[in-house]
Length: 227
Image (cartoon, rainbow, N blue to C red; front, side):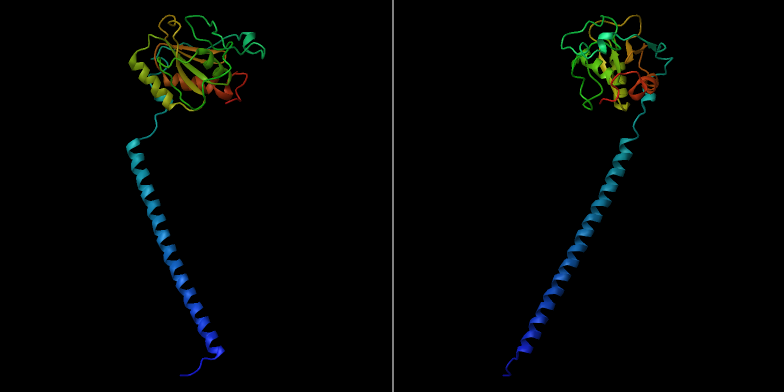
């Protein structure tokens, strides 16, 4: 039996190391192929899923298409109103007390609660939820359009108001007014800071135009840059 020389041992060690390296490279290549295949399948599956979902879901309804036209809803022209000096003074504008805005018409400004209704939580509030008007007035100060509906509004119009809330984008809220019925036949009232529009029915077209004119950065709200 021939005796191995140091050179023979060195070559054998090198060859074994090369075999191990080639085997590791093959395993790495196989793993890369498997991962790529799985990722590709996931992407294709996700694309198919969202494509199917979008077909079933359908396009989002535009606010202007909810309800009737401005004429059909019997909307009056928007009207500017004076702002009570107490509503803009840092010393007097915030209060935790109940504010007397008048029983039969919602406010367009005034003293208000230190906490507005939460941003992004929801845009429609039911009669059972009945958030304090003082909080919604704080939202007006931040450039929101707040749509109020009184106790006479029908269930059918409530559903339309919910659809309007779902369709609206930006600073927009719909809240109930429980302190009295609005005068005449105008039971839905659109408000922005110091601006009002009274309607007899639901008109997403009126709401959208009111928002475009008086909401957010377009209106007179003293803190319209706030969230």
